[in-house]
Image 1 (tube, helix red, strand yellow):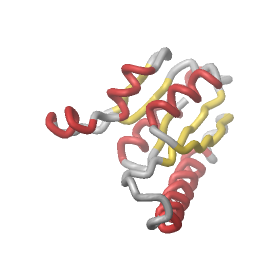
Image 2 (cartoon, rainbow, N blue to C red):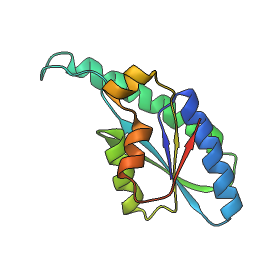
Image 3 (cartoon, rainbow, N blue to C red):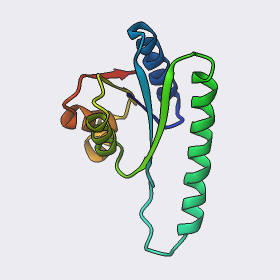
Image 4 (cartoon, rainbow, N blue to C red):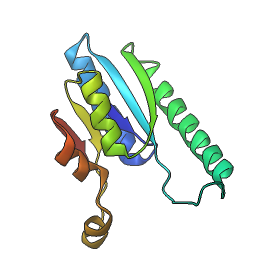
Length: 135
């Protein structure tokens, strides 16, 4: 299983997951995109615009995944959820009995990492599955 979000680190994670799936032969690759609103808005304020932006972002990620995986011959599924990425990724990994979770690792400044945390750090804390973090 691999988490994707359309950023560079996500593309590298997807490439690593494709390589692993090829080596495993019969593996089905679950590609998971978590819709995560990065801003907090009061209900009804800018909600339609935010949903439209999230829809556009998901469509771009889905197209990128299709472009990469469509030519590999691998069995794969695109799964989209909404929520906090580390929670959704660990939940889906358990649901599909994933052999491993692959995710990109973003380099944050020490201060930003302490204040905001990171998805990869939260995955390390939450996941009961082996985890491959791709820089």
